[in-house]
Length: 274
Image 1 (tube, rainbow, N blue to C red):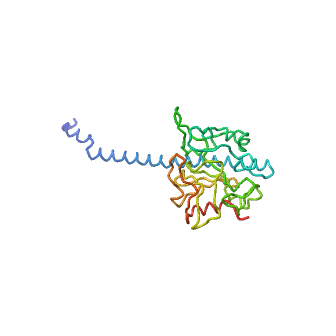
Image 2 (cartoon, one colour):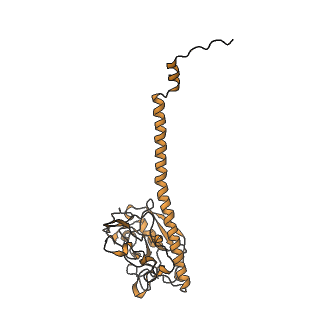
Image 3 (tube, rainbow, N blue to C red):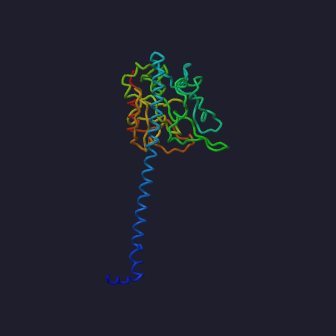
């Protein structure tokens, strides 16, 4: 015969099974920490994803840029429509709802307007995923179609207005180090207007100026399409290179930026003295 089992008071069992207030606080704290870590990971993964998507866009545009040169005996796409040349893309950008170019993909992919049109059939390639600049319409906002510009030191014959003593490269053979010279880049939403990115290579160091502004979509950096076809991400070192985005197009351009290391970097990767 087994010995009798001693009765355990029900209240004692409940005390053993129940969470204490301290246990509950610890569990809630753990959940809060996990939530914060998850939000932090999401916040960092989105810019990384946008940067990768943007880099892929630029790679494909640079492939088209190289194909055009191959098909035209080394002649480069024009950065603008001067001299009767078909520009690499047509249209101009601003924040005016009456300007159809802001949202018209045909100015990018139609060969009647853009040299790229014969090589690129997707207008999505011309906009960085992180570029949320839009135009307001009665039916709601609509994203602008272009985030990229071409260096004004590429494509068009004749001297550069801002850098007349520097070579404007009109042919592949005129690019001495294609891996060090950029052709395309992301431009600041309030700076992008025509199809070209203007640079002053003459005024350096204390006299340096920013004519147009590069973008800083990717945690303070921008993607560049280099003339050999590869893409680089440049992180900016000077806050003057990264003015706030207002989505109004009122950013002052052609401004003094003395001893700005970012300007020096742009100048070094744009062209060379004739």
